[in-house]
Amino acid sequence: MWEWWRKNRVVLLGLLLLLAALLWYSVSLRQQKETSFFETLLMEATGPVQSAFTSLVRSTADIWGSYINLVDTEQQNRRLREQNSLLKSELNQLKEISLENQRLRRLLEFKKTQPVKTLPARVIAEDATSWFRTVVIDKGYADQVHEGQPVVAAEGVVGRVIRNGPHESRVLLITDAASAVAALVQDSRSRGICRGQGRALSFDFVLRKEPLELGEAVITSGMGGVFPKGLLIGHVSSVNRMEFGLFQAVEIMPAVDFSRLEEVLVLLREVEP
Amino acid sequence: MNRVLVYLLLSGAAIVLQTAFLPHFLPYGFKPDLLLILVIYLGLHERTWRGATLVYALGWAYDVFAGSFPGLHGFVLLGIFLAVRATVSRVNAESSLLLMGLVLLGSLMQAVLTIFALEFFVEGSDFWPMIFWPLPLQVVLNVLAAFILLRAALWGQLRFMPRRRVPGLHKLDSRHGT
Image (cartoon, rainbow over all chains, first blue to last red; front, side, top):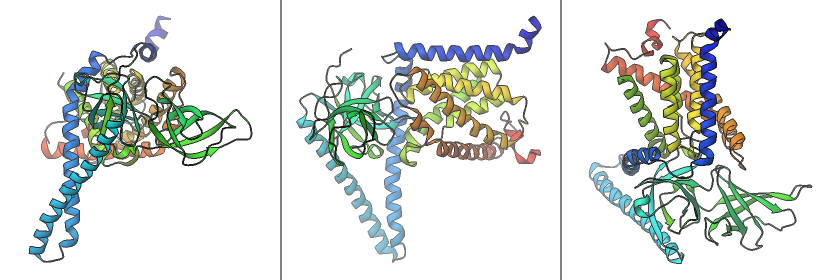
């Protein structure tokens, strides 16, 4: 027996360790609803670095874009090229400012329509893996942002805050598989649940008999307790009524383009614990 | 202790690259899992108990930046580390192809363990399609990143610190008969 234990000790202890890790994961899934000190510490430590990296990459991309624009004019004479470079660089900057202005104006107009207090925030980082859909924003509990608060953009629903530090928060996007939003079709008022599927959303529990058309808008129903009623989630992109079964399979394309998400609004409403 | 500090710095750099740098260049949220490559490297060159503790802690730190389930990556990365430790004595650890092969298998194992931990422990969600369908591309990205990192590390070592030896790296260099 002792000999067998000595021979297999490492394997058994390894398995025991793995089992302990699995048990701890299972326990923390049910218990850890709020941001821990460890998470706050890490978010606070990495937030400025992530923010600096994102700013650096965006400004480098602008300079690179200006350089690419210059390649064509390289064949022309030097003086014109220099002038052109200067003008294009300025134009590029103006274009960027104009685009940002447009985005912020849309956000401002949207903000006016919201009955609750809102807080604008910038996206500073994305999820570290390819499988989950979260982003980090540059506002935290020092700015009255708390877990569970809804996050929106001018185009529609973005997600909800799941973790927060003093100056950063992590937002679970509606396209993550862990996200579920109570929703209804704007015209027919058919109800269902929107679940994330990576790039699109599935609209579950819509009865087979409910009439649904491609392109119809799907909005929040306000039933889940997180999102207020009437925010645009997306549009119906495919409907599959099978011959049997209670429900139909519906796919929704989100209204927000998450690959280009830069500014968002946090709805500072009180969240039920 | 110095080595642990280097590992922590490397994992911090990996996380910043994955969250704030690579997403600007890669479409549809795809990014190589640099931390997985580090865990496999640790599996090849660190002692079991020290490495396991470090990997588990790194997994918990990873959860702060990825997904919404605390403890998930602690379990997944620990599983991969122990699997690498279990196989390392049975294979030729001096081949650079081995690292690529282990990254390939590690990526598959990561997907299997993640699906297992999510589908069996999280209620009411359907995670496997989000992990299963992009898996081939994820594996290719991880292997490509491992190849680039290995080449860059070997070049950097020869260029900037030719007298020092990074554990395992000198064995992976083709000039040492591999």
